[in-house]
Length: 393
Image (cartoon, rainbow, N blue to C red; front, side, top):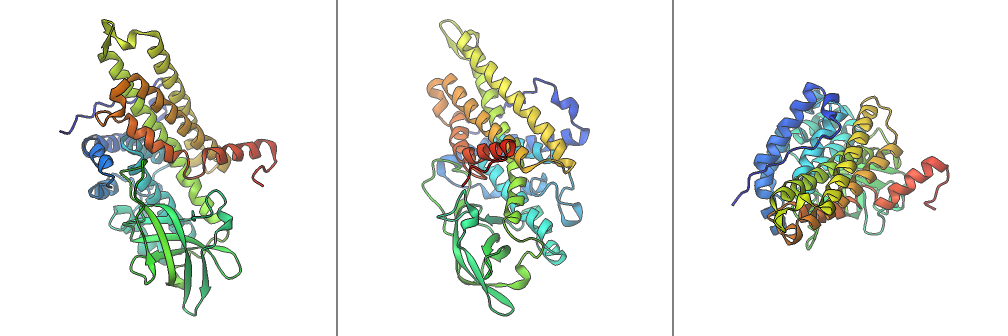
């Protein structure tokens, strides 16, 4: 039986006072969607390891796909605070659903808008914005994760088209995506982006099974076996790692907000449980150790909210650096994982069941801490930024 979503958003430092009325309206619409459409069904889909494809149309309607893309291409034309709030609310529902939205907006629509030409923008963006067309992003390879410059996927010139060969893995949305924005090396060894369409001969998307994490998200591979890609499908306005890394900055920014949504859900669940669960003739929320857990959770959530808000202001002013985004992504995910683990302990045995969202969040966050730059890689990005020394090599 579907449960009522009782979530109340924690705002200990009154950050709502820093939001515009439009920000609050956008957040309210997404929160309402999550409460009505996601929360009642998500545990069942996660248990069955199935992606709820019926949510795609609704995600498009609430503006979750490409909220910062200009309205002329079907996007929301919103600022980065609005984008962050959308991701926060969606991930409060489930990290896998937010992954779907992040990939669509930041890793598919963004590169077509930023690096594509007008014909590519007009062909793809309006349909991607509504969810009529879905996309995925191909960067990570079986042997090249944290070191994308080592990629071996490549293409050769063949007249009016190119021949693409290689493989990508750990690709969200790949099993059902209509297009893939794929990063591959040309014959000079330069990295370029290509839009590969489902149906192109030699292009397959095997699904990844047996995941303990992001179970309500569709993950797969991209395999290219002599795929003919028309030259008009190559993104003309970027070359080198700058292209995919620019996309990842967009996605990492969304994750920084999204992970805090998961943390807020765990905190809110644990707080409510602590007031209702009676042990030793009193609510467990009255015991010091439980209060310590809750106090630390709300402190760390508040710190992350403040960091994200400031980052959103900088991003909207086009002043946010890649290193600042890395710091926020890493901090938010660490905060969320710690909140999930503490909240799980507070709920005791009930914390591992699907009666509550905590264990699902905890498992999902084990992927979020790794993808879009691992926890350790983001640490080294900050280290390099403050010292000037590159510890990657």
